[in-house]
Length: 380
Image (tube, rainbow, N blue to C red; front, side, top):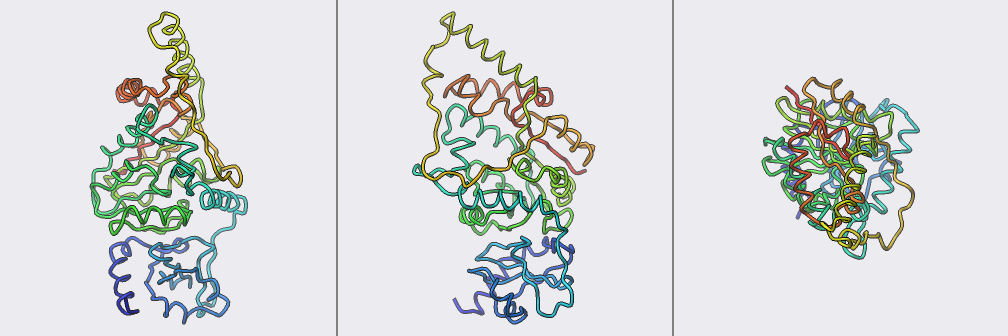
């Protein structure tokens, strides 16, 4: 492909997305420059910072910053932004060193470990925290993810905020009724995996969800799964507001999150364990079925460091949702964590079906005792 053909391809490729994009610093318009045009406008010291595989850049003239397109992935991260030669002054992101350190730590964990695969072909993140097969807890988790489809009604663009590598096949269903899917994450390793899975229907952006590079009211649906707990605690509520900002009216923002365990949750687990013990004593359930399930272990490389993780209880999430919109609903997504489910039910799929029925009937009540909640924010 010649340079002219490559430039034409990039222009056509990003044309649908460009109407949504804005500078994350100024919220101003962005223009697309070819790589030669970008190089010609950069000072010598900035040319050395151009990431490998850069094919073009989106430029904000108002703040004289260029955001490189790495292959087909646009980087709006502060550390990747390039300063143009003709700038008298350049804008900077507000400094918050503690928050920046947390984000670098999370990014490093996922780039070097979380989105690498183990000897079984599983992402380490999946092996540690999630399902690996559609049995027992795996089915329970899969069905909880698919339950979001009723709120993702379709349209032009759907946003997967902190998409990761789209490790679960069922999450590809979130874009079934949309023309385009936009994946945002801090990890380049994750987005390279995601880009290969979504193909021409998808766009990938390296960005901070506390400062999104999109205009107000851009997306006809938004999903953010297991993300907020890895954002600096001081910015978690801000991240929810920022996601809501880019949501189109008459659409849903669906946030899946871990919830700090409450006495409600501990009581539910206690009752289930006591019931199981009584049934085993009466000989109504097998004694060895749950215990026969061996917990999966992660083999191979070890995490580079602990993953930042801060959760809040259901009351905090309810308050945050109500501050953003009066059309907020906090619901139970899953009552039990993976270890809890396997301790109580082993690999049996029948309890998953019963629990799902209960959660469907009493979503808000059971949110108080959930391990994972769904915060559904509707924009009128």
